[in-house]
Structures are given as structure tokens and as C-alpha cells.
Length: 276
Image 1 (cartoon, rainbow, N blue to C red):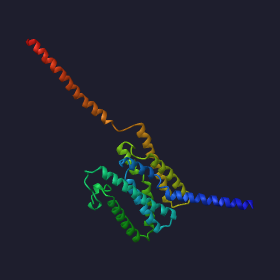
Image 2 (image 1 turned 90 degrees about the vertical axis):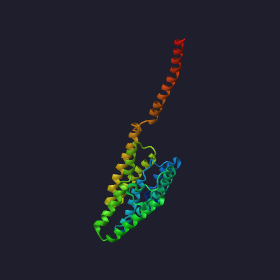
Image 3 (image 1 turned 90 degrees about the horizontal axis):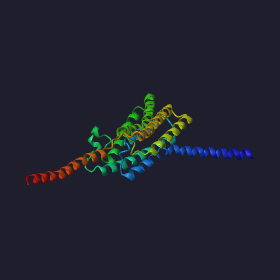
Image 4 (image 1 turned 180 degrees about the horizontal axis):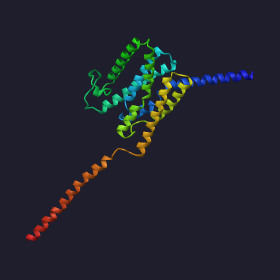
């Protein structure tokens, strides 16, 4: 009797753990963007967040969904892709609205202009939706034509997870360009790191396709590099302090003008005395 009760408790515990793990896999990828979303809404400034992160995740998850037509993987990962796509569209909508509000004099740019100099730098959120839909239709058509090719299917799967592994590289480059991590949510990167570590371990335990866990390891490396940027730029600030220079230079002319103003009457007075 006691053995049966113990087995039931273990079974319930295992079921609970599996459900928690499943929920973490489906919704865990969304959690890191909550603090970043709140920071952007609070400050009305999206410069510290690279919108190319959204581009990378949109491409990666669209390709992952198409990959499932050629090779089966867990349904949880499929749902994760759909939820991530929705999350990235929400982030893009916020960033676009904020940047449009702060750049009132900027020329309006749209997807149908087909100007590669301003790719993914459009003014309206609708342009981003049009681009995502166009990419999805083209990728779906190519997948449908080449679905019988095992080489194409495996390459598609590798491209999907490799693109996702490059998730942090736009943010990494954005920090490098700015020489600062200001405006980037550190909580987001910490959650990236913990989530990617958990996800990679999940891939290894469930014996997911090799493309999944190898690129998961690469993703963890990129996350750790961004955390190093946070430490480095906080200890060794790279941005010059421009306002002190301007104050110093602006003070000098005033001093000279005051000296000139005070000396001139003195000179005139002495001249009058000599003449007298």
C-alpha cells in the first residue's frame, strides 16, 4: 500500500515537473522582453534596443515552422515559435511608434520603396508586417517545391536554429557602436542567458536534432559576451563628456569680454588725466 502511494506521488511529481518544463519552453522565451518593453514605454526611447533582434527572431521562427513540415519535432517548440513571432511583432510596434513620435522631421520610409539603405528602418509598423508576410510566402513556396529533398530540409533546420543562435549579435553590435549598454535592459540579457542555458539542456535531454543544441551552445556564448560588454562599458566608459567642454569654451569669451569691458574705462580715464 505504501509502495503504491509512493509511486503515485512520484508520478504526480514527474507530471508536474514536465508541465512546468513545458510551460517554461513555450513562454520562457517571451519573459526576457517584458522588462525591455516596460523600459521603452517608460522612457519613450528605443535607441538602446536593436530592432534587428526582432528581425532575427522572426526569420528564425518562421523557418523553424517550415522545418517541421519536413522533419517532425515536439509540438511545444512549434507553439513556442508562434508565440515568439507574436511577441516580436508587439515589440516592433512599440519601437516604431516611439521612434516615429521622436523623429517628427524624418522623411517617411516604407517597405514598398525597396530602398535597401533603409531596410528594417521603416516608419510604419504596417511596413514590417508586409515584409514578414512577403518573406513567409517566398520561404513557404521554396519549401513546398523542395520538401522532398532531404538535404534542403536539413539545411532549412540548421538555418532556422543558426539564425536564432545569432539572436544576440545585433544587440552586441549595437552596444559596440554606441560604446555603451545604456538603454538596453540588463534583465533581458540575464534572462536570455538563463533561458538559453535551460533550452540547450532541454534539447540535449530530449535528444532534439543536433542543429538545435549546437546552435543553443553558440547562443549562450553570445549572451555571455553581451554581459561582458555590460561590465566593460560600466568600468571603462567610452563616451566623451561633451557638455563640460562646451561649458569651458563658452566661459572663455565671456571672461574676455568682461576683461575688455573693465579695462576700457580704465584706459580712457588715464587718457583724460594726462590731457588735463
